[in-house]
Image (cartoon, rainbow, N blue to C red; front, side):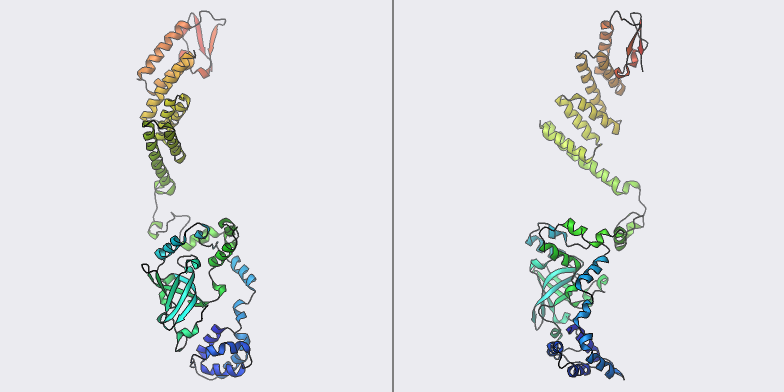
Amino acid sequence: MDRDLLRQCLAYHGESLFNTLKCEQTENPDFQAVVSDLSKASYERGNGGQGNQLVEQFIARKADILFSPAWKTATPRQEQQEEEEAAEPYAIMPPVELFMEVSYEERRAMLYRDLERGDIVVGKINNIREYGFFLTLLCMAGGLERDIEDLELSALCHIREIPSTGNHDDPLSYYQIGDLIRAGVKDIDRYQEKITVSLQPSSLTPSSEHIKLGVISREELPVHYSRSIQAASDTSETYGRLLRGCHGYHNPSVVEYLLGMVGVSDTQPPSMMRGLQSKHFEEEDFASAIRKKQSASWALKCVRAGVDHFKHGRHVEAMNEYNKALEIDTNNVEALVARGALYANKGSIMKAITDFELGLESCPDHRNAKKYLCQTLVERGKQLEEQEKLVTAEGLYRRALSLDDSYPEAQEALRKITDTMQVSWPQHTPHKYLHIHTHTQMPTLLGVLIQGQTLRYCG
């Protein structure tokens, strides 16, 4: 027979029911197994009046059915577990540190740091003394959710923290070594590493007052603890596999459910702070805008580190920092200009021009981007002159002047190449018109007369 159910019934009906039980269940071995424990306490009738005797006789005669432990699990454990999982609104997972390499000392220190009064723990009685009993803590069951069985932690539940059941002379007689206990944390001595717990409802926080403290069955152990045992017994089990195996993970309404639990609206600016939920914010106050500012700041730190490397001749390290900055913020002007300068210094003129142009696209008024692009365009034009690609070189000089019409090097280069082209242009041409195509970017030559021939710009 279930001892807890018998105790509750006897506490209400009193000693007369106990005497009737002894008469009716004399030959029942299940009753005889608990009768010595029940006889240690004295009972008084909980309510008077006619009809109690008939009720007590009915209870006594049907005690083997009414107090059968099977009532706690009316369905097989497997079916009950499936029903619980099917009703799971979200995935209840073991603590993530179970899947991480966290040392024993660190986990123990973190528990003493984070544990607070009012948190709920589950433990197993390992010792009973005249002043209370000691628990070996197994897991947290409210507030924090951690599995701490391997941390070898003990907690004391003092006798004054144990509520009396009926009029027991000794509240400890209700408990035995090996019982599973759910209790509230009463006090924590972090320096001495001592924990005291209580079975009084007053030890809980207002949000946890509905949780029953005292003896529990294995079926009442927290789900995350049961799944931790499952994961620990299978070394191939991963966090992802366990997560996908939870019914709650596949709940299509899991997001709405979790938002409702924490009281956050998915239509208003989400915040865990109630005061902020009622306010309306500008777009630049939202996460995406703030993240953009943070990325720009982080990228700028990388640029500064790259510039320092560049000044000391560490070009490879400088390039790594510039690339890192652009991975963080793809349109960071300072990173593009700095990388372009490094490309130009190494002779990669076309890559430098590309970076400077991208920088100007993001910030058209960036002074250094304009300055360096003008210099690089003139340098590239001189390379093309050496290759006798005069028309293309002239286009680059004019492009430089479109960015800065007072740039002296571009003005001088354009004057020289114009003179050279006029002197070296062919004296005779087999066609009436010379054609200059769009890829030369030379519309400025439109209508120029050379040796009586008309240059025509062909689009």
